[in-house]
Image 1 (tube, one colour):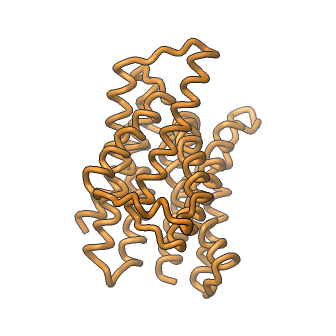
Image 2 (image 1 turned 135 degrees about the horizontal axis):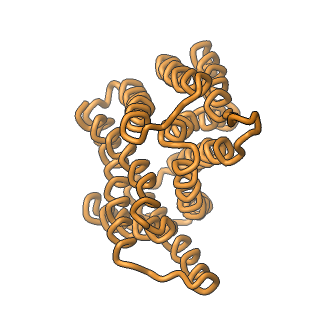
Length: 284
């Protein structure tokens, strides 16, 4: 379980780094681009993927391109959500995105819905509603505080569906990661060049260092999660549940203790319902 714990820590660390970005005057767009430089290099160094399979006519390039576009865009949404809604609600919304991929598994990939998963989905949707709903002291909706967690929820759900599509094509995991990270870097670089031309944004060493640290945490989240499944091949539900519950729980602790994020009663109830939802889906 040490691998799962390390994966949980790395996942929450990504949110912490994004939370600190404004305080440290880090340009998030540049940091995300450098993050994909780090993840691409680390994938090559750790997994040594054979890229010959990518030349096959069976390679799921539509899925790769979709992920290459979505990954940096949703990373930007994640940063905006952490900044406006906080770590607690953002991490919970990200983990609840499994509801979308689960529904897709039933509707598109032919999996069977059982009672536990059905109730878990219903509880999860209620949890999402509780977490994204926030009203300020004057009774007006704070649009950004619920919009960005909702974008994170939908975006990560779509990413998971594309991951399933790529996995079904049979392309080796390491080669898929290499292709996705490389394409994500190209998209991130294109966005930066547009900003450089449009807003006169300048590249800085600080942003590069922050991005490399972000990439290290991002890659650590992935590799430790994979190692967790490899260490416990007969207990995939245990790894799945531990990872998702761990991120929601640790994110809640870090957000409220380290960053003093304030949750309404409804938001706190949403986090609790998220834990219950994930547990029921894993049990199912």
